[in-house]
Image (cartoon, rainbow, N blue to C red):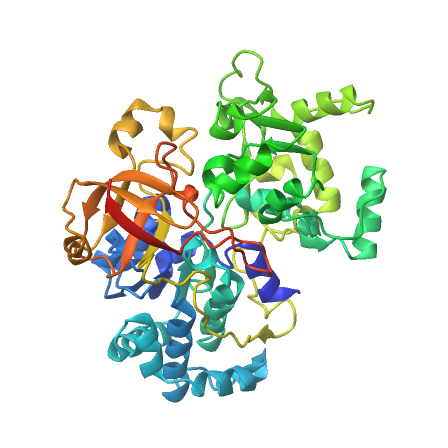
Amino acid sequence: MTGLVATLGSGAMTNSLEDLEHSRCILLIGTNTTECHPLVARRMMRAKARGARLLVIDPRPTQMAGMADLAVQPCPGSDIALLNAMARIILSEKLYPADIGEKTEGFDAFREHVLGQSVEDAAAVSGVPPEKIAGLARLYASNSPAALCYAMGITQFANGADRVRACSNLALLTGNIGVPGGGVNPLRGQNNVQGACDMGCLPDVLPGYQKVTDAEARRKAENAWGCTLPDRPGLRLTELPQAILDGKVKALYVIGENPLLSDPDIAHLRAAFSRLSLLAVQDIFLTRTAEMAHIVLPAASAVEKDGTFTNTERRCSRIRAAVPAPGEALGDGEILCRLAAGMGHAWQWQGAETVFNEIRTVTPQYAGMTYARLGMWGLQWPCPGEEHPGTPVLHAKGCVRGKGLFCVVHAAQPAEPVDAEYPLRLSTGRNFAHYHTATMSGVSPVLAREGGEGYAEMHPEDAAALQLAEGHRVRLITRRGSVSVCLRLRSGMSRGMVFLPFHYAQSPANALTLARHDPQCGIPELKHCAVRVEHA
């Protein structure tokens, strides 16, 4: 895939964070922006203060929903039905550019598919009244430029890729691709996850999202690295546990990740890790995963090393060591070079800039970047030459693939529906006080006080039906495990939903979650599984 679809697949924003301040409409779906991306939320608030319309689609009553011109709380997992219904309103009321069919591909098939569905059916599936679906559609289509922002509340489903395509369809339909203040903008969950993906830390691509199955791309990388590369994709993270249990993987090297808290179905994962001949973990703290390792390699933190990070808006920026690394801790690159030397390879650590110059030779989007050019503020890829200023808005001169591509996407039920034994829907996420698995924030006394211990949120009426009240100790049970937490009641919650933050090692949400994953991109369904709640 190339162009718009590939860009969305890489998870990068089509626009810039600064652009959000100049949007006339901001549609948030599946993102608790103030708690998970507070600096991004600040820009959205500035836009709102300037008159932008704010629309929020989220099952939970977030702070942004409280500020919105229109906020709806769909049933978890019903996003595609809702987005398709919005597109139907826009099509039936002709709120789209007249030349949309000339600038895109697949429009006729998309239009036929969407117009063949009813808004009333989408309302029944999502729980959002038809008039509110129409209100969302009209506000989004009538206030351009409009930015659509989403996060893991959209992607972490077994059909996450289709949910992103539904977002792309809506932006294409309204002419909000390639314009300042518009775009489709995923808010990445960690500070350098975009950079890691750009560097080829995905099992089917080389740096710059060049497919490993592309012989020419492999040849260029092989010439740069002096090696022979495999011509087929490797295993996805969600495929690893079974591969270990099947004896296909004997050793695992984990760098800066804590899968025994962040990945689904922890019991299954722990059973797999116990079968490894070698589990090596490279990290800055002794995480739950590191506790299980055969060997732990102490790494330097971001403020103790030099290098670059690339954020969600495709901005590559330098990081500079502010303090020396403690004890035996080393930068990741130096650890890898020492390890390679110990295995008989003549690798020598020559500094982060040397690595970055190699990155430029194998990653087309970074070819025009240099340390001198990055300066204090960085550059946004693609930056193909040293005279190129970087690219704040993708597809400004038309979609890279030639024309924007509409995709027909079908609504689907979550992978594990509720039933009489497990009648509630569990969703997991973050809160404002902690960062991911709390490897860093959890050791801060101030943040630990703010974040407290694990908890679950429910609607008061759901709790009353179970004879539960605020502050009760409850047990959440799924087909994979159980955790005990304190109960909090929130009147704005969607009925039938339970929310559980995944930060807490003492009440690990991913002891409950489902390992089913999207067959196209491997993302697990962390945002929905069937659960029951009992007195602890």
